[in-house]
Image 1: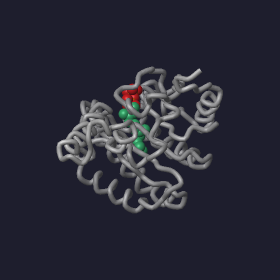
Image 2: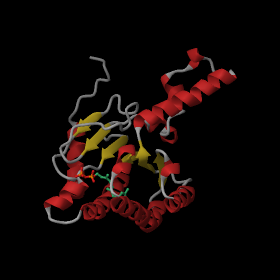
Image 3: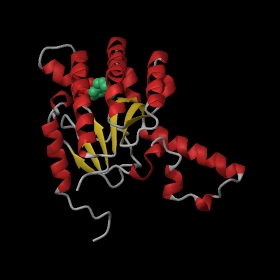
Length: 234
Ligand code: FPP
């Protein structure tokens, strides 16, 4: 069976570059080519939701020149791929503190999201300046305000009701992650989709993100299809 929602932590760009004697930023450039290939493949095989961790709240601690390469790479990616995304019915969504991103990057993202807002074959989400605890806290605040305004009572707060307040709410019935992939051999969730990944299957390919090819993606999918998912039942 195919997963409906795949989330990926694209880890190891810097190490990939350093191991080859290149500056770290070159790993991000090569990494963005992989983003393009994996997005295309996911769409081709009919995955309805793909969420990519492109920048965590901790990543702000990186040197200014690396940050600048990351933002330019993202902008270039959007500019070059928007036509392809439109043609293939891919909607764009962003989760995270978008207001912290450089103004021109925000504009680029907002324009692209607007341009692609009616696409409905796949939803591609970029997690940018994202942290899961911040997302959950934000949802708690929103729902507390609704309780205080009397539009909902605390007893009415179910899983489904709560999820409507998470940044992933546009994913609707696909917001639960089925398959979580982290490249580079690290086996951590790093504050990524903590609520949404409650029942996810995990795959940890021992390669850096710039080496994560379509073939490797299919290996992850095959690992997933061999798992027996019981969701707590027997
Ligand atoms: C992790 O590798 C990767 C990132 C922090 C950025 C991911 C960005 C891209 C794949 C390219 C641009 C993104 C898009 C969406 C087009 P790392 O730098 O933490 O590697 P390291 O752990 O080896 O240092």
